[in-house]
Image (cartoon, rainbow, N blue to C red; front, side, top):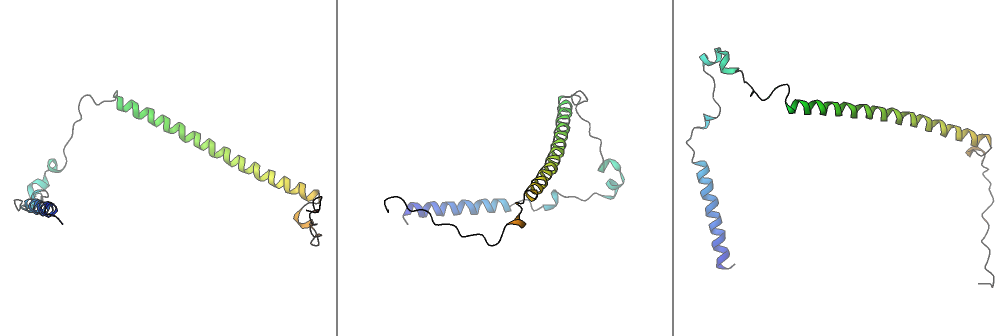
Length: 134
């Protein structure tokens, strides 16, 4: 390796080590994010439950409420169309089965069912030779 690569690798290693050292050099108080409530706090309901008020512009006539109502109506329509489609598919499947059954009966009535095929069919004839003896 040339010197440029060695210096850049060394610089990178030093920056990583310094960043790691700074990250570990906290104030040592790891209990700052999780704290147990004291006895007096646990007895007061306000310490655990607190009423959160919404801004005045969020109400029943809000655009979000209208949009959610429109979305719900669209979803209900899509569900109904899906159910109708599934019903149509079931009906098509049933009528298809009826057509298959009718075709099978027609074949049997004409004597073409697989049960009526003889086992001793003649061999296939050889193809004719082209004119000119080719």
